[in-house]
Length: 138
Ligand code: THU
Image 1: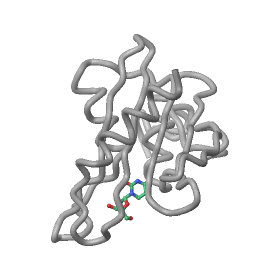
Image 2: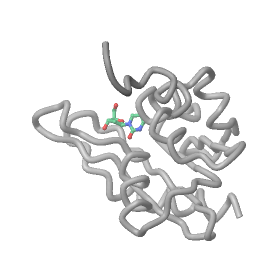
Image 3: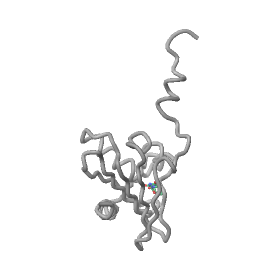
């Protein structure tokens, strides 16, 4: 199963738009329904407007009406598996259903598996938000 996810991530990586970094990333997400959603990084001449591969896959998942991530694969260039950036860790945590494995793959096939929780210990979550939400008054 993980191999299918890696294959999907590897394939979509080929569509990355990376004229500025020349660093292509592909991501694939399996949801609770078993469906797979993919994304690649899309850069912009206004650099901060670029989006990560994981963000693209998450956007595709939500657009399809799905909101529960079961498994993630990320593939990028270089000799070592590349971990999701900080912002993407928070984005993945938003939809992680339980202990979600994240497999990071390098182009030579070497890989490393961790979990969303291990990538973002002490994550800001809904409980923090509720505890600090001001209902009324000062
Ligand atoms: N990138 C991703 O797509 N995902 C990550 O988690 C790490 C970084 C992209 C963003 C940018 O297009 C390029 O890699 C270099 O930072």
